[in-house]
Image (cartoon, rainbow, N blue to C red; front, side, top):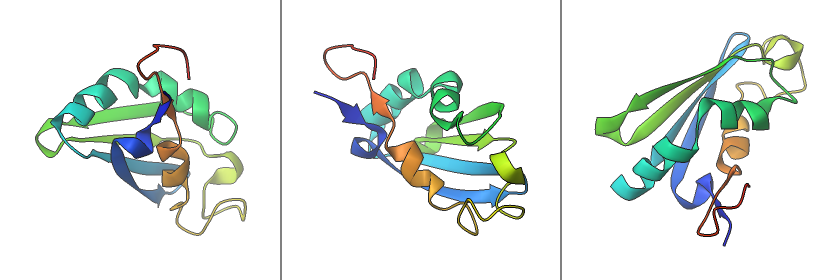
Length: 109
């Protein structure tokens, strides 16, 4: 069974000049542990590579059960310089939530 980040968490995004900040807040402690294991900087960069040059930095907020990702160098210069992204980068949380996790089969997503 394929699991996505959306099945384990909710997310909120906002623009940061030429970058974007996306917080992923787990539904519970078990979901947080799984996200820490599987939602790595490399995994996020692979998904965002078509629209961002990176790097991606991940910050763990264990007490909140959340991960905060800062993705630098969005294509087109970020939301303030391109019409390719919504005005504050909010739709990028949907892309983050669509990332497939390994699931029970341990197959690459």
